Image 1 (cartoon, rainbow, N blue to C red):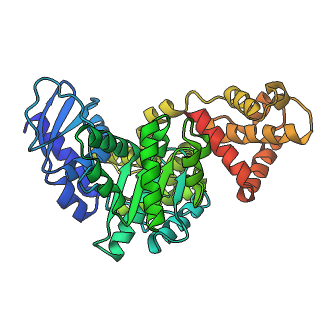
Image 2 (cartoon, helix red, strand yellow):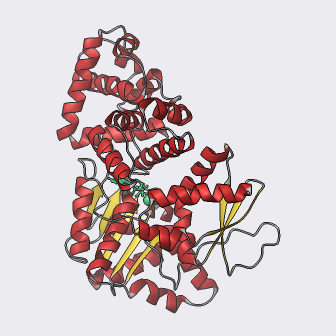
Image 3 (cartoon, rainbow, N blue to C red):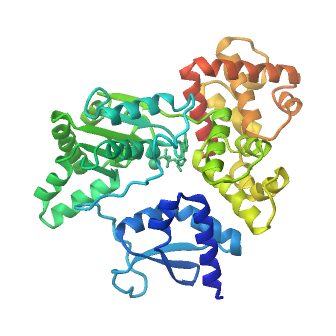
Length: 438
Ligand code: ADP
Ligand code: MG
């Protein structure tokens, strides 16, 4: 067996376990490995649909290969119909024009775990998909990376198709939209472009923050939006931030985006993170003890994609060592990962960032003043120190001007309770975490 064969077997085995049977059979099994050289693994796929699907698996492929060989590789997906490359082929912008954009069949409402952080987004997305073009139009979901925006957006499309298989839906990223628009100008096919994007029941545009500074594309999108909206067609948008904070997005677009229901999605709380992990483990028929689920959820606290990545890593690690998943194994498997994502967050950094965020001084945070505008940020900083670093309560107390560990505990309690009912605090915490872990 060649190195490539055994590697390929590992990749296929891993996906056979982690994906549903249908997905495996239709989308994974038809792929063929071509060669592995200079850190590039070329994989041949029968259609653009397959290629788009595999592009979403890239991180997982890289991870499996890394676990198997210790090498970092870069997968490259080629179609059976692609011309043979002459040296390095120039990256060609992916065009969705006149093509069905594929949806991930696993992104459904059933596979999405609800929690306080995404409840509004979930409910609005579900309502929009059950009654498109109605109350939740346009629907805008915004929030940080890896929190489930694309998942919910595609769940809308999957649900609409489930109710009516002939429904006309287009799902694109804002970059797809721009490329299609630019190409249509170059090739004099603007009429077709417009038909393609306007004759729809629903248009879903992912990551609209990339429209920033793209003046002409914004104008075209504005017109597309108006036609669809006037015809009561569903529009769904996602963004990594509040549209009012996207630089260089024209006022008229921003105001349109805010017409419907902008809903924010924030980082899931610990219980939700555990629930998500539990459901992923079940989906993959993995036997993961509760203490391991807890351990992962404690370690990785902002991004759901990273949660999945951690679970995946532990699974591959356990397969490779032929050992069951235990806390000890999980700790080993996550060693590199935890170090990479968290070494930079220190109590000092947290104090500095929180101080800046609330426009006070770091010395106020470590000091003894009891005014509300200082006490609350101080408690937030203590809470974040506990959540984002490995320091003990006494150590945290010490770094906050020599306070007792019960003071720290009280602060953490207070913030944990308050965040349940205070949306403002919730979003402040998300912003701070995103900022600290960027
Ligand atoms: P975003 O578009 O916000 O960056 P994605 O939708 O790509 O995030 O989500 C990243 C990964 O996390 C996906 O695999 C998605 O299925 C998963 N995910 C996110 N939130 C949830 C959730 N609440 N329940 C289950 N899976 C989730
Ligand atoms: Mg996304």
